[in-house]
Image 1 (cartoon, rainbow, N blue to C red):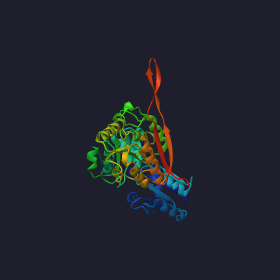
Image 2 (tube, rainbow, N blue to C red):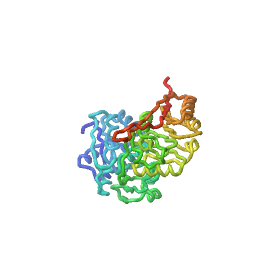
Image 3 (cartoon, rainbow, N blue to C red):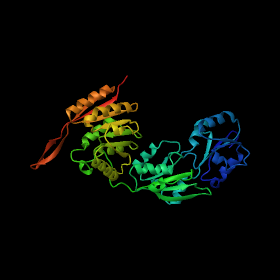
Image 4 (cartoon, rainbow, N blue to C red):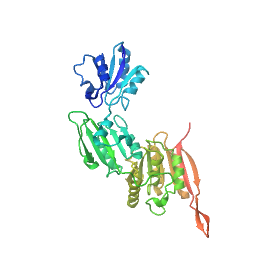
Length: 404
């Protein structure tokens, strides 16, 4: 590379992993940019040292404006194009203007230590990112590598997994990979939740596949439930359609019963987090049983009676109310106050009084109200033929923001 060149060099686990070409580019560098830990590998290098910290993009733009014809090398850990600075450098300095020299990633090194096939695993980076990304990965994978940060530490991740019913999963924590203090080991989640690990670490989570898989329209007989207290699969399908779920959203399932709506919500939109609020202990036990059967880590049982049990929950993007009784109006009033911008509420009502209460409460809250009536009949055998047995009608009330 000539004058004014820009090269992004992946160091792998340490400079010991550098190729001859990468060493040549480093030797010729007149500006060396990277995180403090990476720059410390080259204390005697004569180049100008530029620290890349929280304002990486701003610092690189400033370098682009002032470096002139000096050769710039940007240091990256692992592979610069794998949750790294490579794509950002291309955006700032221009396509075709940047040379990228990849190297081994922490995930590859961790897989080698653990002797596992990493093409079968999901990889999630929580480094400066939302923990909601972990929820999406857990909904679709049984093997996950996780890049951590001080907030999303191995102990914090273990506590989150325990809260999602994964007590039987196991976790490997690999600390200081490629460094003199390297160590790694397997832990139960309870063990990991109590420990402190080196800041430089990678986590690997492994669990047994769920015995059953979630799909839209789960048959009632396949769910643990109390007779008559289960949203029928046809109603579930239409309710989920009106909820318009997307990955990463928060759903309150109020009066959750067996948790059937929340179960299927995670199948429709992997990465959604469902708080299943239920006051009856036996139904909470059914929610837990269904969560374990289907591996529904997105489903979080919340004991208590609404609206009081809702106060400590994070604000919702979507709300499904399948029960509420005399408190229905108060539940919907609180829901409307807490609903995030663009949120939607769906209420299932089987009684005329509940229909009218929900319609009035949603209207008072300033939401546009739509009502859908569902009348389902299912075939039953009779005299060598079949007939259609009608179920009670159900009304779905959909509350959504009014259009300007």
